[in-house]
Amino acid sequence: MSAGSERKICFLASEADVAQQSAGRLKHVFGQSTKEQADVIVALGGDGFMLSTLHATQSLDVPVYGMNRGTVGFLMNNFAEENLISRLDVAEEATLNPLCMDAICEDGREVQALAINEVSLFRAGPQAAKLRISIDGRVRMEELVCDGAMLATPAGSTAYNYSAHGPILPIGAGVLALTPVAAFRPRRWRGAILPQTAKIRFDVLEPKKRPVSAVADSRNAQNVVSVEIRCQTDIRHRILFDPGHGLEERLIREQFA
Image (cartoon, rainbow, N blue to C red):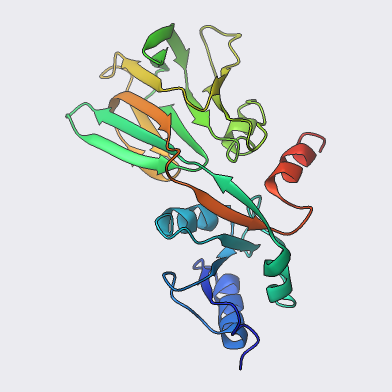
């Protein structure tokens, strides 16, 4: 009987050599279950691989425990091959709801995608983008001239959102961060904190002269004319963390770094 026979584990690894090698050793010790049969999924890689794993397994309602074999690892636990079962037994669970992006392109195509971290709009040409921002059907900003703008979840608030001087949001606060990227006009606008229930719409002004692309995590839509975003509360991602190192603690610690 293998050490992991009491718990069905599916090991997934990024393409990095160190992640593949670690996965091979862990499978040898603990065995390997399919994603559909597993009690828990162990993802070996960095934050990017963790996001892709969560997207790929969102219909399974299986918790994912990440171990850092990449370069960032905010969503990951420290890597160790020892005591894996005991770590899984005491792990703390955080639940995340993704954002749903519905983008309309100039050619009429509709691109729908989910984002665990953020949905971002970026200028795709030499001139700044011009965006109109509406919240729940009401125009709140007639014209934002900028390099881009993003809507971030609490889980994504420490990523690109934080680099763009957006706020760090507590997990479970029920809010989203709307953050501009290099706002030119209004120059001093720092963004807004919105309720999780809000429906946010960006309309691209002068789309031919000032093209804009939209990105939901890694899904890209080119030459968009409008983007609507809402929180998809009927989808939940379950992430496991070592005790004392959960998302709440990491978010607080990040603010005092």
